[in-house]
Amino acid sequence: MADYYDLLGVSRDADADTLKRAYRRLARQYHPDINKDPGAEDRFKEIGRAYEVLSDPQTKARYDQFGEAGLGGAAGMPDMGDMGGFADLFETFFSGFGGAAGGAGARPRRRGPQQGDDLRYDLTIDFNQAVFGQEREIRIPHLETCTTCNGSGAKSGSGPTTCSTCGGVGQVRRATRTPFGNFTQVAECPTCGGSGQVIADPCSACGGQGVIQVRKKLRINIPAGVDTGTRLRVAGEGNAGLRGGPSGDLYVFLTVKSHPSLRRDGLTVLSDVKVSYLQAILGDTIEVETVDGPTSLEIPVGTQPNAVLTLENKGIPKLGNPVARGNQRVTVSVQLPTRLNEEERTLLEQLAGHHSARGVQHHHHNSGLFARLFGQG
Image (cartoon, rainbow, N blue to C red):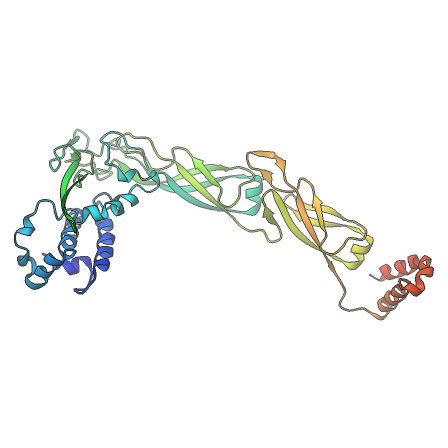
């Protein structure tokens, strides 16, 4: 018999919390519902027995002093080694089993058909693919019904037999020691997994599981207007169900890459554009980037710095109603020159003089100055 401390991978002076954490980790690793490797169930029982002994101060003291021999009659208690500390760790075991199946693992398994687990697939797409949608091909690993045994798990010509551990009931009673005394707990049979039946002659193709792991190629339709966090459901493409049960669903979670110059706010596309001070004063028509490609944008006369201009229907299509689209809002940044040549400086100084209070009466000369100035711009 292996040393109990070595079994749990803890030192001899480990406290109660350390023991419990080590037991939970190893129990999850070797639990018969999770680990189908040969010898896993026996290891699981040994781990349970080790925790049961070391978690009780009295039995721990006897074990520390005399080893396995010091436990005496306690070693013969029925089923205590299978899942020691079961009541304390019941929620730990069954809250995590079953994954996305909505906590179904917390209930005893049914003998009849059992629905397969849902699966999650994370997919990253480009900004424009999210805007306009796309059909994508993905490859997913999932469980499919074994075609050799048609999901029964048994070799051709044989079938499941009644489980001898639980007599076909699917449940066993376990004695559990707690600080408040000993209790009897009804739990899922570890031999048959709660089904009440075992397969004596398993199918060689699937190892008796009735399902096999395969990589499947799927084409999925990404609708227009999706965003990071959008979840697409592909019905029936999760794991195959057991004993003829229906398959689970596949959920595709989308992440959208950022765009070099465009940003998204709901259905609105946001962007920035830089214009010269001359374009802002006189107005201009420039080319800006949109999700539809380069588009003309009119810069009105006298556009102020940080003005926001709107391009209608150049935003994001509404998810589920792609005919309805948002707008693009363009923030205008006005660039001022950092250097002027002599002629530009002279023209600007003349223009500044004509705009002073003293030169207001000469405003009719401004048009000529504007033309000369902008001719240099």
